[in-house]
Image 1 (cartoon, rainbow, N blue to C red):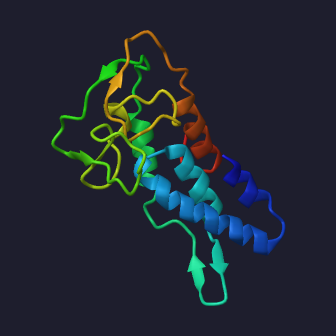
Image 2 (cartoon, rainbow, N blue to C red; image 1 turned 45 degrees about the vertical axis):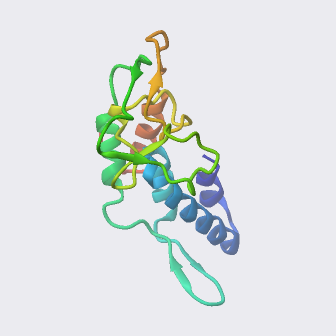
Length: 166
């Protein structure tokens, strides 16, 4: 969340470009997680940004079509926010998360799709975006109800930044 303010309000161009490069690098790590809030933050702050070092200039602007997955995640967000048990590890469209991504992982517990991304938001539990999106099984008991922040925060960020329309 701090990247939004770091890039938006930094007055020194050299610092702003350095923060933007860091945000762009981190966004590359986060893209497979399909988190619309982070997508809206990164894309809104990287629009038109470049980073120049002694060797080259790097274009940091988001690629065309970047918003499609963020909007799709919001569209697919479940209305039922009860933490139900889910089991997805048996699916054929999933493969184990490579060890180099998470060396500390428990073997057989973390998965991603063959396209390199996590399964969509409506096919897994998303209580909050800080849960591990690569963990496809959950032992929910139907006793907890999420508060909706996981949808509302990215939704209003998308509206504020003009990505979404009323």
